[in-house]
Picture (cartoon, rainbow, N blue to C red):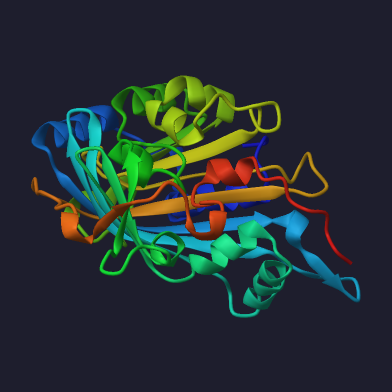
Length: 325
């Protein structure tokens, strides 16, 4: 964990911090890969909530040597449907949340013409994402403000459901090959830990894996990340370290996972972001319906030519303006 900033340590250690017990408690090792593979084979559905944290230090402003921090929280909740290839459908509600005392700073940048801030302000209103049969739909201010009358959903083209679901959360833990490789290379692991707060019998005893890899390594490993990134990471972020964690129950079934990155230790003006996902429940197979064709119009880009800015790859590549003092 020495390679991680304090920010990443908080993101990744937090989910398992209450699980620390003496090493003598370690016993049988649940098979996380097999547990997830079984859920894929059943075509299970997953309901989840997700909390993100992002800072773009170059957009800070300073009043009397006191920093006004550009920080926000991408929030998600929704349902994923699994299949043999991983996530095959998704229905997600997402919004960007600025702390009340930090929102004025974002509005100032937006009024000054900063396209990233304008995009994020638009995303403070709830947006819905649906991906079914590889077709990606969005509704919400950033995508539908300029649609023809009667159209309320934007068709954003074809992409995998996994790449729709795993943007704020940068690692798709439902890719079996990716999951297997991460666990094999884990830098820290604990098993059979008592968890009195567990809400189900299986969550009364838990375990976790934690580790790191670079964006370049993640690109080589994960088909989902390759689609989100669009092209191989360039020199500006290829070697940036991504930390990850998985917390699982007594049968090896994950119920919390996190990932994130920070450039704080190597850059004066830095960016950092991450997300923690809580699996609320595992359920039976289900079907997610696409919006009615009468409500849909094809859209190539967000309103007013703004950036999408709804995944951590865009954050990692951001070319932020210098701080204003």
